Length: 271
Length: 251
Image 1 (tube, each protein chain N blue to C red):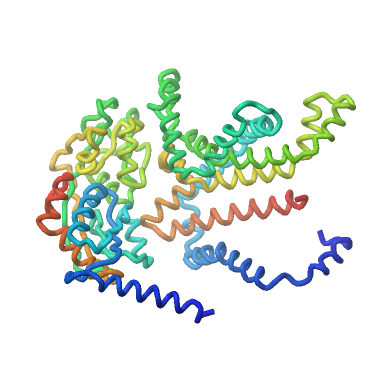
Image 2 (cartoon, helix red, strand yellow):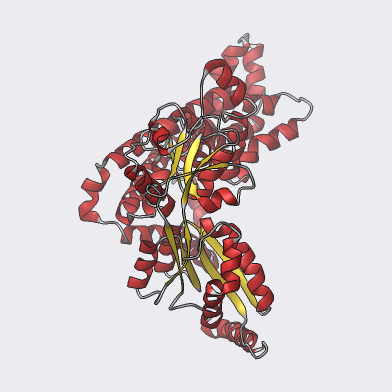
């Protein structure tokens, strides 16, 4: 954004106020110091060996599968939901909006327990499902994906809904007036105009799913190769094997930073 | 900046000191942070109530969790006063680090198989843990109940088909009680305190593993006098009686 137009305005603003800088740096330290603590404990020379252990490889694979699946499900179900919330004035809309954001507020463990009561073997839907098909969702990889989606999808819905509501609808109106069908308007006008928010929502959803712990361990349990994602592996390793716990934490930090920073540079410049 | 902070800080110190000395002859007061294994939850809630009645100035705060997690907190300098561990190795590490001295065994606990009411998975013995069909849970390998459970299975020559390794014994018990798991290995005390939410199946003596619990006041306890008194109380006849009410055996 450092165009010639912008520069004179920047100059007028002048140096940032000292207090703002001090508080801002304190704010940064609040985030950065714990990571420095983590880095201080990294067993650098053992890293290759720790990272190639079965537990770590299995957990990384499962974490990637679950977080990417969650993101795709959020796109498939969350995008239409956001559209309905933004565009259709139905009774109880604010209640629905509240329900959608509930997973953001609830402790994930509560979400996991709620999933267990609904989709567990003795659950509201889980029991008939189990009797009809023999399917058991808890303690399966599907259970992990359901738990991570439950916790992460609200990020997509609220981000996209806000973008849709702020969208200037005259563009869509113009397209329609020029003869575009509803789907064409959606595909050629609406989606491209909300694209930055959609991508931001997808990235946040992925990140939240990647780091999910409480709902996963409560609903899906903890078994290497089947339900043990990276956060669960860290938690279990913390009990006994700190070097492994720190090594796994470092993977999570690296992968998350790579995705967040990488995508930001690629997609969010527009924002 | 420093001078601005020192006055409220001093006031706080004075208030805390006054608080500590303001009690009767017993001289006990303030907060007492007790880090106790999750399996002690119900028993220690009652111990807390009785101890506070006897020592009205003391506010016992229970920090309950897996023994290994509590150990880690203490080794990282958490300001706990008392550590009650569900096994000896975790206490040993705390003692080795100089954070505690002279730990005492205060109770023993046997293992039982927990099944949901009605035993839908038809699990009757450790041998049934090897079948694929029933959903089987254990505690994670690194928490004491997981370690002991695996020892018992090993003694029985059983390779379990585990479906989940739960982070602590309470999480495991909840999933059995909900009927999401068909069986798990827990402490006899957990079954006793579940009020019928799970059924217990005895494990024969020769296969069973007895867990010994240790307690110690911590060397760097912020409230050392109350810590010593609390340990004393747990080891006393009155304390042991409370613990026995929750299915614990005296050492």
